[in-house]
Structures are given as C-alpha cells and as structure tokens.
Image (cartoon, rainbow, N blue to C red; front, side):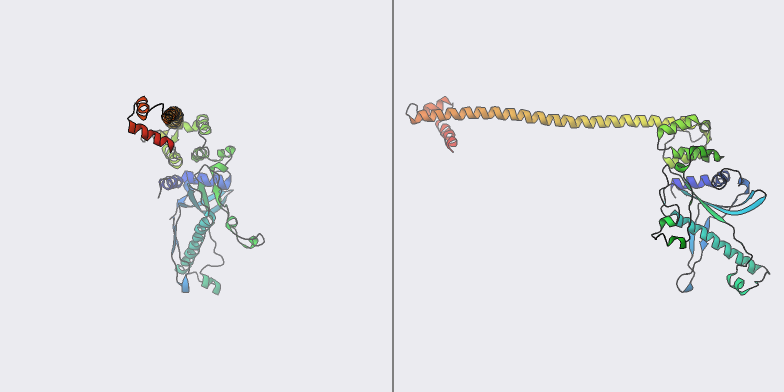
Length: 354
C-alpha cells in the first residue's frame, strides 16, 4: 500500500470525517448522520459465485472503509451500510468497481438472512422461500458507496456504467445503470464548502488549489482556520500533494500559513538555482558558437592571405622560368634568388607546371 493510500484510508476512517463526507453528499450538510451512530464493519468481503459445473469460486475484495449507521431524520430511522473508496488517482473503471463492492454486500446480506432463518424455528411458508432462503417479508439494508477523490483535477473518467458501455442509445434503456457517487474537490463550488463541518473542508479546499500556488497562498492567508489545523489534516495534504510543507513532527497543531511559506521559499531557491544553471548552459553554448564563428572568420582570413602569398610566389617562379628559357638567367641564378638549391627550385618549377 502506497503512502497516499495509507494516509487517505486512515483519514477517512475517522468517524467525524466519515459522517461529514456523507452528510455533505446525502443531506446537503445537514447533520443527519451522527459520528457516534457509526459502527465499523469488516471491510473484507467474500462472495462465492458459481463457476464451471456449479462449483463455487471464492471472490474476495477489500474496501477502504465500511460502516453501518442508523440515521434519524424527522423521527424516521434509516438503516444504511456506508462505504468510502479513496482515490488519489483517477480510475476509469470506478463505476464497475464500486458496483461490485455493493453487489457483494447485498449477496452477503441475503446469505446472512438465510442463515438466520435456518438457525431459528421460523419455517418457510412457500416452496419459493424454501429454495431461496430469503422470505417474502425479508428486506435488505441500502448500501451506498462514496468515492472521495484526493486530486486537484476534475474527474474526467466515467461517472456511471452507461458511460463505459459501447452500446447504441436504443439499447441503453434496457441496461441497468450504476451511478458513481463522487466527491471531487475541483467540482465543488467555493460557496459549497460551508456544508462541511470538519477539517475535511480545509483538506479539500487545499487540494482544489494545490496546483495554483498563488491562489493557494491567498486562500490559506484569508481563512483563519488554516492557522491551526490538526496534524492529521496537515499530513494528509502534505503526502497527497507532495507539498513538502515545513512543520515539526512534534507539532499537534500546524499553522499552514507558516508551513506554506517554506514551500514558497524553496520554490524561489529552486527557481534561482534553475535560472543560474540555465544561464551557465546558455552562456556556454553562446560562447562555443561565438568561438566557432570567430575561428571560421580567422581561418578564412589566414587562408586568403596564404593563398595570396602562394600566388605571388608562383607568379615569381613563372617569371624566373621565362627568363631562364630566354637565356637571361641560369637555373642556379634563379634558385639563389629564392634561397633554394638547384634541385629544390627544379622541384618547385615541376609542381607549378602540373
């Protein structure tokens, strides 16, 4: 399990945080689900579907958090099984994944009811009740799974089963849909955060603006609650967003205004260092290019000068050869004028005639 999975699971297991998430989503922030009403359930689910030749095939799944609750509203009791799935990354098959979790819970309820009938003296009244083990008067508890996305981006993955299907529109009405219940910070309006009543509001607001450091700093400075948050909330946003917040491990409460200043200071230092490195690299490249250009120019000038000198020398040799042919000079005289031996002058004349 990654650090993100560990910290988000631990955070959402808190009864107050758990209740706050469902009250926000189900009851628009009204405090219907009380933390003390929540009872933890085994998050490990096992169901035995039938495989080849009717043989049972064990299927095991692990939920993040699962609790039962008796929610009271208008003197009416609502018995619910509530599950939370934490996502630090977008999951493109989340509707099917949560649908399986819920189906396993319903199968487990049916099996438990059937077992309770076998243990009791209550006999089935019909053959149908006998075969299914589930009586006509039996009822199941609703199962609601809420996905909490701990990311700054909008949830771009499908939000229901129909969004995952390759099917024509005229077929979809005959395919039962399954809708994803989702809390995604980027999709919550700023005015809606007041519907939360715990630090879950601060955590989600931090996540929403975690990629916009200017807006995030303004939010933290404006909101007084950020000046003293629990260590658990600070750890959550620090790990999930990889913020590298500056605070002591011994602190029980964290001043996020001071903690985020460390990020900004580090960002400035990193910017200066990156700028220096880029400047050195750019200067080196420009120096090499300039040196190459200067070298080419100098080489061209030297080549021209050398060519001119060689041209003048060749012209002088030609003149002397002409004088030798006319009998005015001897080869020895011409060689002496060039400070050469006779064989050296003859070789130079030979090269010139090629």
